[in-house]
Image (cartoon, rainbow, N blue to C red; front, side):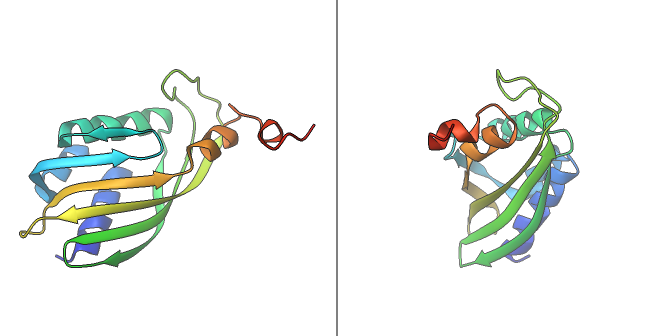
Length: 143
């Protein structure tokens, strides 16, 4: 299986909420960085908990419109995360508003093609603005 195919499969498993099925694609050592939130998950279990947080805040969240670039031990995915905020997002209450934000995710692979780490970049401020937790006019100084 090519790295982009593995990456796509992991996104499909997220969309289907089949988090435990990801075990077959991930190596023993695993670390994943969420740059927007400044957190690092040091195990697959921590990563699954992080994905469950997303699906709690956005029960219909989907990874959509992926495009991939791959190298010898890496794949990069560009995609949109979409969903309705129908559950709490950390300490923030649900707003019933839609999120539609571009993401860039990299995954690293071992010699056997298993994922051993990754990182994701996205616009957290954009999410908070779309959900109504921050007013965009206050960000620009407009009245």
